[in-house]
Image (cartoon, rainbow, N blue to C red):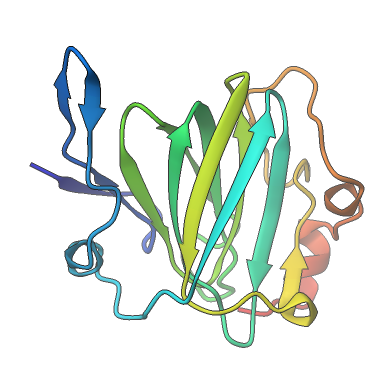
Length: 182
C-alpha cells in the first residue's frame, strides 16, 4: 500500500510507491493520475524533465516564479539526496530545509509545491532523475540560490561537489531575503 509522509515544513510530501518484487527484479507504477489526490495536488502536469548525473554532482537550488512551478520528483536509478528549501517569506519555516534520500530501487514520488527552492546531490555513481512540472520552463522566470550558502547549512553528503558555473554564480540567501519572490 502506498503511503504519504509529511514533513516539519508544510507543503512537500513524499509518496512511497508499491513495489512488487520477484526473482526477475521489481515492478512499480511510477505515476498514476490518482497519486495527485493522495498528495493534494490540484494542478496539471505539463512537462517532464529528466537528468542523469554522476557521483558528487550537486544541482540547485532552483525555483521558477510568476507563476511558481511545482515539481513531482522521482529517482529512477541510483541514489540522490533531494533538498527542498522553504522560500515563502511569510512561512513559519522560511529558510529551513529538508533533505530526503531518493533511490531508484525504493520507488517514491516527492511533491515540491511552488514556493520552495529545489536541488539534489548524487550519492551513487550515476543517478537518473525524472520530474513532472506544472508549468512550462521559462528562463526569464527562473531564479536560484547558491547551493552552498552558509546561512542554509545544507549537508549535501558529497566529498567534493561538482557544480555548474551557473549554480556557482547564484545569489545568496541573504540577497533573496532582501527581495523575496514568494
